[in-house]
Length: 155
Image (cartoon, rainbow, N blue to C red; front, top):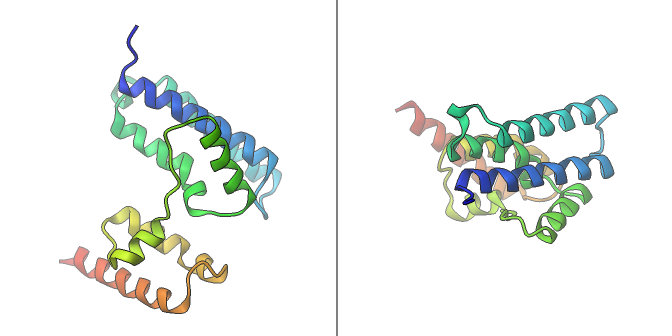
């Protein structure tokens, strides 16, 4: 029996969800209490169930992308042992996902292309500066890029 693209992608995402759950259990993020950990794990289990057994109207790659974003956001935007171990396991299991440095791409091109990048920059700019991942000049540039994007949206 031939596996279609959705089924193939959903199986990979289900495996990535399992890895995320295992890593969160093994390396819970600093500041997360048991309630938060349980909530995030329940969310990942729900995503896994939804992608493996979707409602017919959601059995498409576009809907799957939203779930991929939900599973991977913490691991694309974060750092530390949880994130590092997650990506090691993704690679060890040969899953078709790559870690990308969104911030570096945005800074290099000096432009925020879409609402997803805008939300990303808004969400991580302060923590990235506090943790030394970006410097003061890059914060100034990002603030300019945010203003440009917001002005473009108003037109």
